[in-house]
Length: 354
Image 1: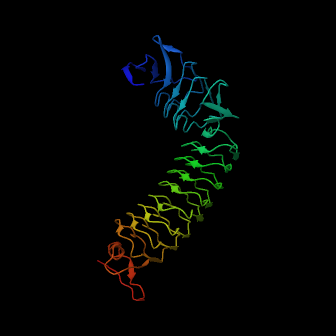
Image 2: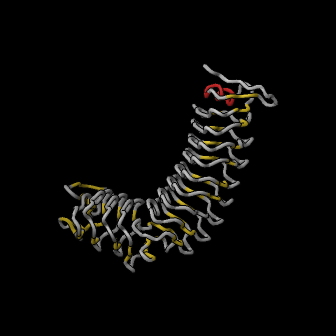
Image 3: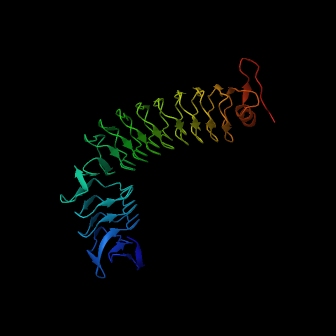
């Protein structure tokens, strides 16, 4: 439905129902069923965002939808009860609600349900939101769940382990982002997609083994995982997306699958402990700053198949000696980044100083 009119704190949809645009910053709020005679069906984007006084909110039975960031940063909000007609809750609707411990759902709701205060949709197949304020250190996702929705566990500081069930297929964007105490993350066989920023900023995650079923790994998926010291990639991956391992400072070695054809921008930037990485013979593209500031990287064989290398791909790799094909993109990139290089079969090293 398209908006037709906008008033001070609400707008009207084409069906004559109201979107609440601005909520009330009080400890206890009751959202009315109607505003100026118009049924309230939507809590609009950011309507209660940052309202730090809010502890309790009662939603109207007329409500159908909660938009993105509707209650974001309501740090004292403790509980949400979803009425029966709510059929859509946007990603990040309750992000950074640090005191939120339960989201419950009217039993007549056809789309959503809760399990012990955790929100699910699609008959339990999608875990939509795990309340940030829960203090469990371990959580076991129920059997039958196939999708972890975008941001579902984001910012959940207490969690150390999330046990994922067999049958899980997808982990969406930012699903576990900034779970700063998460230490174990084991994916069951059958998962095919790991979204962008899925585990970004999980600073205590130490190891990760990806099942061989994963075909897609999103940008920045593990960026900022500073204690990540071991990682096994799926053998069927074909690219390392932008920033996937940026600032994984303890990652020592990376074994790339033979099918990798692209390494994205900043993919390994700041991996300061990395000493070795193999570049597959099918590799075609190395992105800008892909290995920038990998200060421990000592050798790298750049295959002749590489046809494009972005700017500063090896800048700051002060210990690196790259083996390159003469006059190839790898040769030019080594010169421009001012690292040592040599040709295959030769022990003689060269370096452009100026």
